[in-house]
Length: 81
Image 1 (cartoon, rainbow, N blue to C red):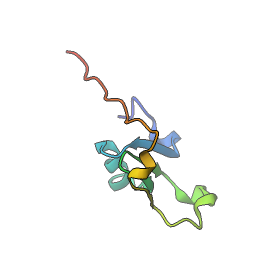
Image 2 (cartoon, rainbow, N blue to C red):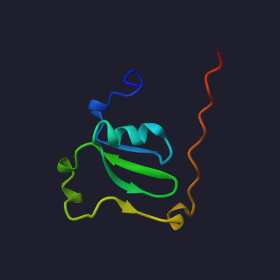
Image 3 (cartoon, rainbow, N blue to C red):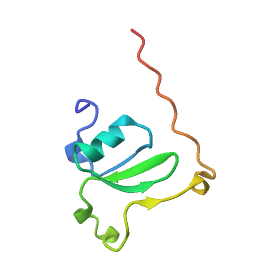
């Protein structure tokens, strides 16, 4: 929703893996999946602007061990109508 977040100003996004918006950024807006684990993904709008990633095979993938010490994303309460 552009009224919540202006994606033209964002370069990176850390999102819950199962969030439909994360998949939309990759498919519709061509963001690049840089990292994924069972909990989260990191998306990059333009990898060319991230020279530190030039020699990294993307996406970096981690298993369940990446979750050690991390809490799940909080569930958002639905607006009461």
